[in-house]
Length: 299
Figure 1 (cartoon, rainbow, N blue to C red):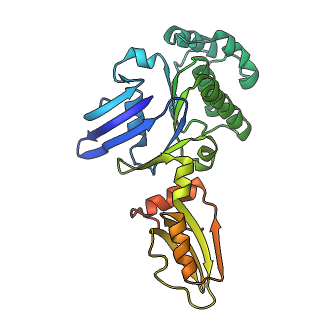
Figure 2 (cartoon, rainbow, N blue to C red; figure 1 turned 180 degrees about the vertical axis):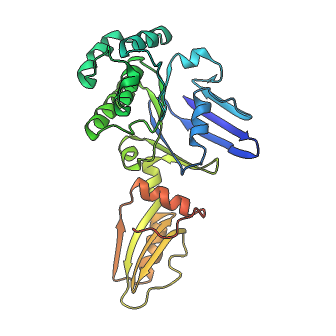
Figure 3 (cartoon, rainbow, N blue to C red; figure 1 turned 135 degrees about the vertical axis):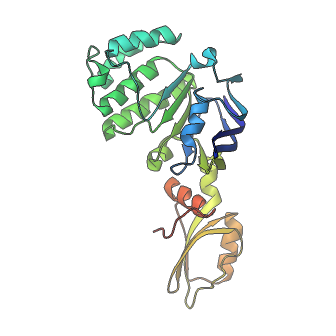
């Protein structure tokens, strides 16, 4: 559905994106992760047709995005910093959306009044940031988009409303095969909603995988020995993090799980536990493995 190939973009001497490739399948939720300054917003602005690439291609449903009204008629973008016409009420903005999106659903708009419970005659510019985010989702969902691009989408929403919003979005993913790309620093939340993960670092894609596959490739081990722990264990795989306290070693290792465990067992540990990893830990250790400035991480 969304394909980015060889995308590069520079601003003067700064290379914001460097030969980026990503693929977002139809009807999936793709989580775009990365530290501040990694290039996430620059990539998103290419996906929604705000920026034109220096090199490479950006297509949605096989069509180039930049200056393509056909693509934008089925794409909804909800940025971190929202913009609405200052004098428009919710109802007036809804009529504006209805003029832009062929799939606009008035029946759903009125039905969702029960979810968002905001007077449609209120001027959006006078609402709180959290209420403006609710309006953005209300309008965006009623546009019946085939693609949604979300940048820190639920920032400012209370926990109950966050759950309602994600429920509505995921309902469309399941029933309408809506394709969603979401960028957020709330990794715990992304872990619950995403099918695929892409990690962007210094303008390059560090890793792009199915979330389940990503979790099976990195392993957190807790190992205890009767005597002194071997310093070079394991030599199999890539050690992303190692922390030793006496004869107990905590380590995060990337590689084939069975080969790693087999080597550790040969050292005759007293205890060998494989502990679950969160998406947040995977993100931290993937970046730490390429030299990102992580001095000390508590496991």
